[in-house]
Length: 548
Image 1 (tube, helix red, strand yellow):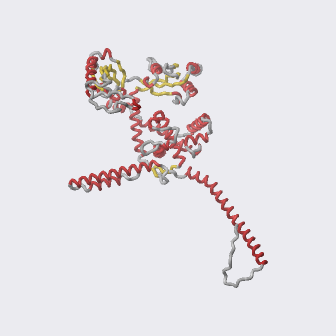
Image 2: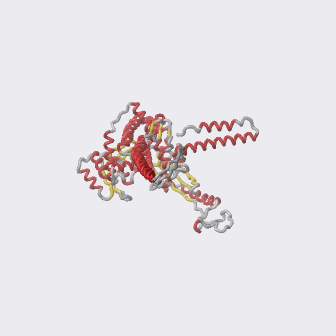
Image 3: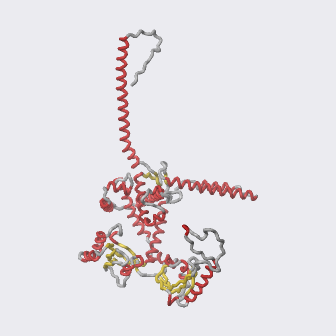
């Protein structure tokens, strides 16, 4: 510490300072400086200790607030960061698992952060998943409230024990600990204990939803009535078909449009010559010739055309649907139908229309690679040879990354939804419950060890039942959940801000549009038009309320 010289400023006479006095004063100052330095050192030491204690303590405090504090509010209920992250991870994982094969077409690269990639012009994929998570939280909380008010009970203990075992196995297969695996699954702040209530809520609600489905399942009378009002969507048709394509010119003819020669006009990208585009007159002439050929084929289409059987309306070419499913259509009716887009004529002969009553099937399948299918079946035959023991084999041999059906069970399948050889076996006449086979399709590397578990309702009944049940569940959810309000005072959710800006822009556009109409009317001299702007303004204010 540097010494500071001081001068007396008092009113007393100045004292003569001797060498002794200077020596005594110097010692006194040194002692005082030492005491001052010691006090400063102690204060600094205490301050540093306090800072360190605060820093160390702030980690658990911040972590506690993050884990247990309110991240957002959904429908008036507090949601912690852990709870939000859990639902975000579940929602995004479910979506990616369901649509993963198509996401690259949407521009999503799963090897990069989804929050940096655009889902729309204004929202990132992260925003999209956050919005989905909030909706799921709102629905879950509303359903939990409804279930508890009803007094619904369900013991999740067994389900949770099974979940923990699956968690351990998955973590082991991933080469990591359960602790780290839980973080990978549910977010950085997740632990097994912290996410336990949310996992158990899901199990409880799954049981409650199963109960709701039982209550809301439509009766056979409702299914029949639905079919009677929309038969064309469920009926099948058999018909003969052939087609005649118009032979369009590949170079100009006398019917070509006149063109001006322009340098480089006939060259496409990288200097390649573009394919010739026929004129309307050339297309019309080619279609006329094709029509004449099609008219000739109409007389022999039933003998020469290709027979198409059991075709649903959704599977029929769009230009043929209305004709084939016309209620007045009779066996033997023929037609020549134009397809102007593909420059083609279809020649069609109607055979019959009917409701396919073929039962669907329940089967259990082991999907395996190589030639060990027979060994797996022999193992089953050497044991109890029951459906239960076959289920155990499915769980033993099925690779869940390839085929994840629980117990290998596929319910209500139809031949058209299976590999051809497997479909043929399932639909074979006389097929009985307990039948088994090893099937190796020529077009696949997989081998199927299959157990026939019995027949089920026809496809049309299953389809209508699912449609009606889905409608009833949607109506129930709309009534039970209602509007999902989100309170985000800390602005953690970017999508809310984007949505609010979009609504404000739309309201502003509506207001400006109303003002322009008002101005236009005033110019035209019509009376009573000055209220248009006020009306638009009122609509704008009405639309700028709370956003979802």
